[in-house]
Length: 448
Image (cartoon, rainbow, N blue to C red; front, side, top):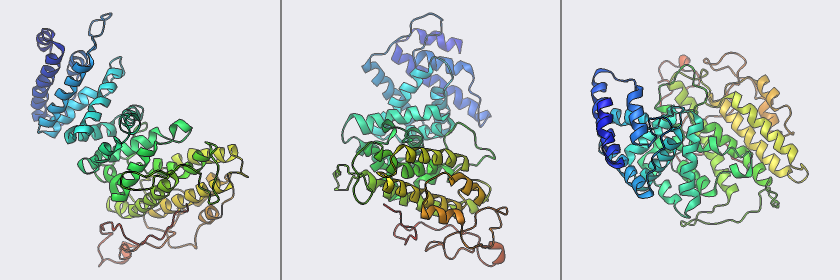
């Protein structure tokens, strides 16, 4: 690597950046022939930091600065490299070498350039870059993932009106990136303050994606080998927990803005329409999102059973429901119950529906006693009380230990042929996969 460095020092910044990508492409291509997962050592990373991110190797030396035009040219060089490299394994390891955080002073430059590269890839539809970014989001700590998410939201939902249409179009180009992007923005926007309420353009885009295909948010889960213990501090396998948080907290978060309430419990906000004439009332959008989330939860029993994970893997973690319930309780106390009774009722209704369907599908693993303890301090809600008290006892699912919540709803149309107990029906196939029917009758009606 020292010989390569000396040759690069004689080049200008852009030529050196292009040359270092060329050398590392050759280096990792040969490494991949002998090892399927080569270890990225310090040498290649240091070359990238010095000649791509302009971080000097010598201590005390002033970092070089690319002007705006040079930076744009560098982004074009990188975009073209990932587009022209045909081997996905080489693309992935180069992308990882470039942008995996190292915990050093180069990380700020690394994250800044990554945000601009992915933003450019969205604008010019460079699918290989988006696929690499999806893998990066999956294996990178969440504190960095939300930085990338914020950069994209700023570029496409805040800075230029109407530019969200460009971001919306990548749904068909890279669904895997869209899934990881949704997971990232739900981690970023937790509705804990007015500044952390999702922008309306972002909300409308996600609702439109899930209306097109609710299975979008399961792509990472369905296509990822599941480890015994999911790593802490990384994005979840699905954005389900984050989307449940959005739907449940939205009525209270908007009420916190102290806008007058309508008689039906919705906050009076200006309703706009997009270019296609679709209503952009945020409360209607959250209602649609809530329905999409319930639909996805109802699909999960089949997928968990197919992966032999039913009763063993909770995609909606009980530990993540605890802070959500605490936040709802705090918001309900903060708002005057006399003036926010309808918003509190709507929030608790949505929480009850999400808990009910998540437990029935095996996505949330907890006992009824756990649930009673969790919700004991919340304001009274009839639907939530029904969920806590539970249904008439049924025979427990074979995969669940005694005491876990049994099935509490009738399977939706299209799933009725799936036997509840496969062992009792050896002649029937075990939990066959079903194509989701968007027009299927749905037994749960979200309360608006």
